[in-house]
Image (cartoon, rainbow, N blue to C red):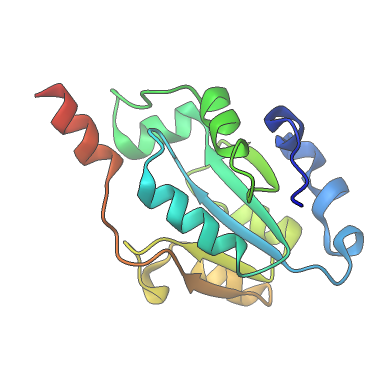
Length: 162
């Protein structure tokens, strides 16, 4: 039987990541890192996150802060605030931990934690993952998971606003 925890208990502040998920702490367990905005959670996100979890033992989802998402997606974003997005993602049983990050990419988290695997969704190829070089430099591998991209939050927002 799965160990279901309250979603809020899965959300880790950035300053506590190393204490909870460093290589020394996790031992032989494989850490899988993935990241994104997850502004309006849809089936593509769920498939991608579930497939990421299947790649290892511990799944850490790093969510762009409101400021970071605004820089990446534009002034009208996010639709849903960072803490709500974190709780929604943490509610998925296969997500082990969630953290919120201010930067536009997760280079610093990769340097700190050295995840064995960094997953991205089907809208990327292994070669165009922004963090690819940092992952490889820190001994990890990049995996594209979740199949072909079928949904886009930006397209959903556009559809709803018409």
